[in-house]
Structures are given as structure tokens and as C-alpha cells.
Image 1 (spheres, rainbow, N blue to C red):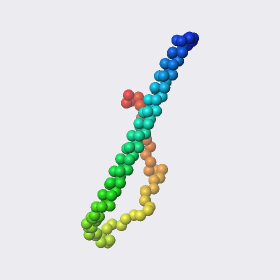
Image 2 (cartoon, one colour):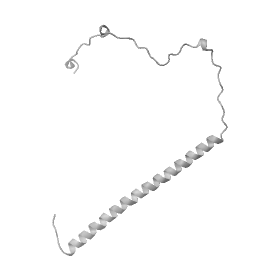
Image 3 (cartoon, helix red, strand yellow):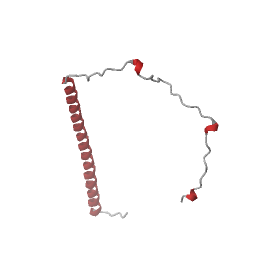
Image 4 (cartoon, rainbow, N blue to C red):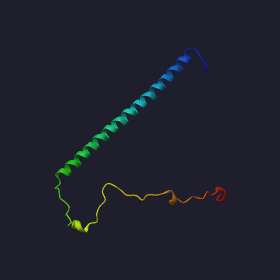
Length: 105
């Protein structure tokens, strides 16, 4: 880097400081703006959530009609807990044939 002395160097330094200050100020302003927008969006969501909850509480609760359930003797038995899987032995496995990739390329 070329170093100059005198008024030219001082002016260049002041210009660089001003550019840096403007850049830093714009970054800070953008961050504040984003934070403010996020807070406003949070407030809107909270208000919407509150309205939805209050409208749900004000609405009369109606139960859906209950269908007649068939008797327990007509329903098939339901397995609870354990799932039975078939047991496999080594004789059940079929050997795979190794195929060369050269045949398909």
C-alpha cells in the first residue's frame, strides 16, 4: 500500500472513516428495522391467537352425532401389544446372483 503524507492522506482517512460510519449506521438501522418488524408480527400473531381462542370459547359446543356401535361379539378380535412375525431360517434365503455392471453400460 502506498503511504502518503500531508493533507491528501488526512482527507483520504476522513473519507474512509465517513464511509465506514455510514455503512455501520445502515447495518444498525436495518437490524433495528428487522427487530421492530419481528415484534410487530409477534404482536399481530398474539392478537390473532387471542381472537381465535375467544371465538372458540364463545361458540356453542356441539357434539357430533354418535353412531350406533355394533355389538362386541360381531367385531373381530384386536391384537394388542405384540406383533407376531414369521421365523426365517437359513434355508429360506435365496442366494443372489452377482451380475456384472459391464453388461448394462
